[in-house]
Length: 580
Ligand code: FES
Ligand code: MG
Image (cartoon, rainbow, N blue to C red; front, side, top):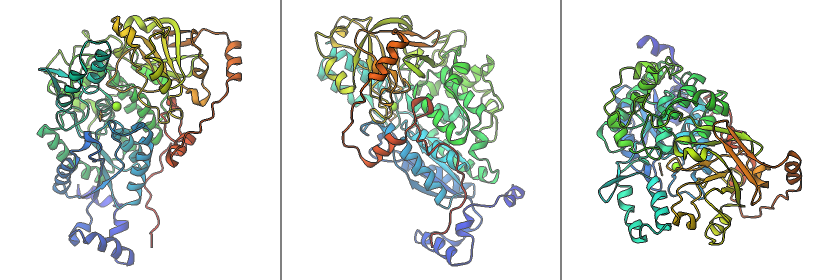
């Protein structure tokens, strides 16, 4: 190790390593925290990027998590410095945490580049925090390791397990259908979220934690260990130890986040029944590190991959069972043995390949992590749709959909925006049947703004009362990874950006054909052109914050990952000028 050590020039030495005015200032002010001289001598300074916030309950245990990371860093001969960044809490932030994902990524990028650190540990949990921190760190390209906060324990209601988010959608539909009382609905709250951690379903947080592990940016088992399990804190300690060696090995994100790593992650997403949000987030992360990733990669690589993880919202179990069954290494072993891991040699943060890490992983429960020939769904790859209704693509999650509805023609019932939907869906005279297609406009990146998770529109109460459980729904919105249904999302371009979704009218026939990747409005090209030309852009005079206006002006469409146009790309970690 000492040979390698000599070869790596520490970035932090450009702050703390000189005997002059600047060195004095950088060291002296740090010393007010009781830091002795020797901490500044030749040790890697490791940033711990913390998304802790009491307003992000999924990440509220992160001060303790950071302490364990620090112990590991100190043990390995590094020096930890913890710093806060904008915390994207999914449950409280309005209008949507997606609006501030890019803001957080800018915070992360500038914090890393402007400060004395040689590497960074990314403490992530609640779903947007994972892509935000990976995006920011990728733009700097320094050694980085992801430590997730872990999922909550299983939710409990009347002695049975209930899943985060998924139970809310289900119970709310049951209230509307008159199957349970409002009293029981509200009583379910306490048991729904009963420990520290992120949503315990295979929602976006769990999906992105799995993606971070499949990409190789986290140690094995990072995705699934429950937040309150002591082994989560051991993993934090080991990650702290490991990041110090990553500095001496100059193991930067660009060596991990290769095209091969993204292709592995896409396949893993199909196997776990992962969230559609991964399509947007992986694209945004890839864009930062400079890896080309197209929607068609999801079809090319994901299509035909069986979903073997039997977790809600697609299946039956929760993240606790997933960890006890063997966690993500077990899934990767399953896939690899079936020749479904395309790039077994992809490098991971522990210096070993993905396959070395997973090839002997034990599988303890074949109900939860099912055999390849007894999958939950034979083809779990995210379905990418195109057609005159979505020229730049749309997505649907087959494992969360009703198979019979994935090939469907029906009459559109159109909502101009989310407010119109909420009002109109309650109308007892609404001309809607179980075969109708619910179409909602103006909920995309610019339209909402922030592309909220409203795509899984609740069904009309009168149909719920008749026992209807699913209908085809189409919008330019996203949906929560905890949600389910035959829901077409991310229609691009969005209505607000002039996309054809904006010209759909009540009664138009829409055809969804998942097997062939088609989403079409059955009108002629002439009619389409006429309607698009005649379409009056509704003036949007609603008050916007400065950041919201920046977002609307610069956000890219869903097929491009919803990053800001000016943030795409890697800008490196060159040490900036002195401030004095
Ligand atoms: Fe934080 Fe679901 S609300 S992960
Ligand atoms: Mg979410």
